[in-house]
Length: 606
DNA sequence: TTAGGGTTAG
Image (cartoon, rainbow, N blue to C red; front, side, top):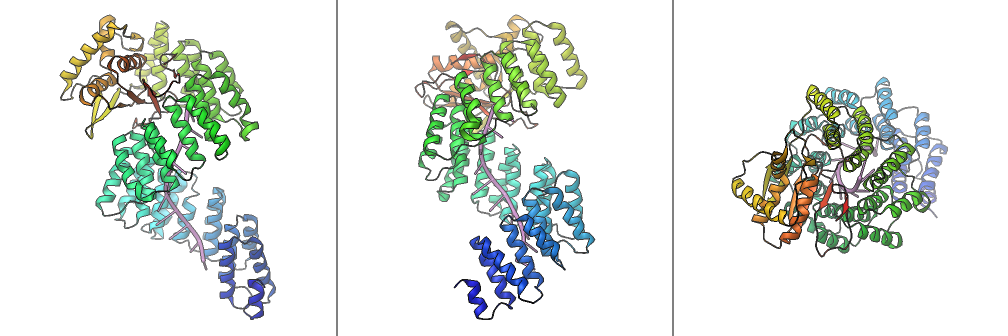
């Protein structure tokens, strides 16, 4: 005898409390068919169903993802209250059918039903732009709901989603909060928008206010640490993570942090100790290996994943193709690209095309890269064109570079990086008039190159070196050591490559300009202040220039040191914070891998 | 009876 027969026998069907208990039971057991039977019984027992029971049924259909059934029941209801309206709004919001959720809010108003905090927190997530967000924010004030913690966390998330971090912070600062989720929302907002500094400041504020960080807080904090590439701070956060031993999301974030901070030994330790690994774990490790120059190992791990791991997804394949492009594996790249649909059921998307364009570009097959770009099944975006432009810059093809740059500037008219790269290509191919015209356009538009800036962490302190800024207290010793080092390197064949200087300077002066690139100063400072056995880890806001890359490689050989420089990829969009660091340039990892790493800067295997 | 925060990509 099932639960319904039992209740029927006891004559409890007219008792709406019994109905509600049954519906709750169906929801928690995901008993779809039983739930439908309850609905049928309710309609056939001769009593007018109570509104709250119908609302519960509505919620049940929504929880079962039966949106059509829910809509049908909603249409048939003779009376609707704030709960039934909110349930429908929430359903459309979760199903990402934003216009319906917003439309229901208007209809609800027209029927004279006032929204409450539940309604706003649901409808905010369906917000489809800043205009509607501002209108909703006004309504929230009108109904006096701005202090509700659910509404506030939703407002913070949505302002951040639309890039309005100042507004998100204003909402946060409006009231003192005793709610951890509101803290997590604001920390997560800054971490997800590549503003690691502010995210970490908020995290400290939270701790000072007496809150204990839990999984979501630590995950966002790790993300902030990752965007800033602060390995030592990451290790400190790791200590807090230990008490949430097997939290999958947190472990994935930890794994990513170690990969992006260039510590693959730690990443490998995390990966091997994880009892549960999902598609994100595998994808993170594959991409992490590739980003650190271990392309062959990345592909080997992918083969293991195919045998023992979860089914690869869209992002996994991006990582695999990234490994191919950075390893210079042209044939394997084509194989995975051509067979991804058949093998994994994934249609190639913009990112996969981007990797292939990168792969062809690095191999100097620029015409093929252009053909592939024109074959794309979706519109190429600025990042795709920027990948092509980067390859043109390496191979000094001014015609294709100019074509790619024009496409980028159509999409992002003030993109500084594009002007710099194009001007670089014009100058190296001696197209002086084009270079001059471009300079004039830059001047007219007030476009300036962001100064190169490198950071290095020594004794828990971040030391910053900016091009032409000689304010570091030990700058005299550093430049002295740098001069000595350059002399030593010249002895093993180092010749400064002045192609990477964009200024109107000649000869020796050109070399001087190169000499004080921020990453060179940071490398020398690392050599001077870090013990012989420790890795020199540097972060740079722009992409490392070819000369500095060559310099770093020679230093690893002559000084027997490991240097990891994490720079800004040519293909990613620069942000105003300049902290969107998404690639590691490996300048020598002796004894760690025999894999050849194909370098974009010097177009050779290192 | 209705609502919230966290992880992977070029």
